Length: 303
Image (cartoon, rainbow, N blue to C red):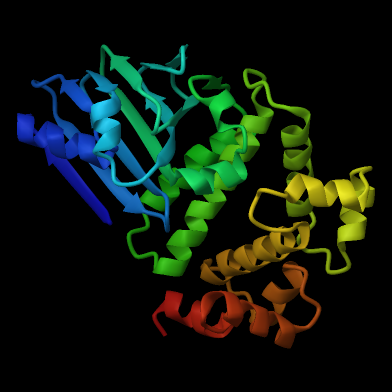
């Protein structure tokens, strides 16, 4: 799904179509202003850019029951201001800030003037793997941070790439969720439990050392002053072990480098992503994506 729709004269049917792209909501939008939105599928997640003249909305039990699946989302405002209420909390979201909301909990939103925003929707289970304490995050504003700015830029770039293949789109979505987790960890407005904070710190430690081919689980535990047993405990419930997290991010970084326009060889990509042996890298990559690194790069270039 990747499309752009501009609605110069807003009708009830168009509002219904627009609200469905954001999950079912009861929406009342300003009718004398153009409504423009664009959606892009990013694997399981999807993102929606929209511009509208102002609106108020409510998502109650009726809308929740009419939703096909359970989702969570993060709303990022680029221009204007939106007031979002959920879980007994209210967030005023302005330019450069964001708020997380849960699709299975009733919520309300309001904007009195022109609004430009991006919303990233995620399958709720996928979101919980990255953000185990989702219930403590909803309705709390995320302050501006380098990670949040990077998420803004990443989604903006992703929305302008309609030719992403299925694997590249899925990788883009996973990176967006990781950036969201990092932005939440950097926000002073979010109060997280000690284990969640520790897990975020360790994930950031791993991601900063993907190119170190000698990095082991023992090194990760030692570098973060925790025991191997506690490291294992931290990753329980995330759906993968510490080593699996390390290898997945190495593969995803490799895929990202292979899709870039820069002239880089498969061997160079392997070394930059922590693989000493190009043959081992190719086997690991093919097992994950069904194609070799060379085939992935050539497909992106149309060879």
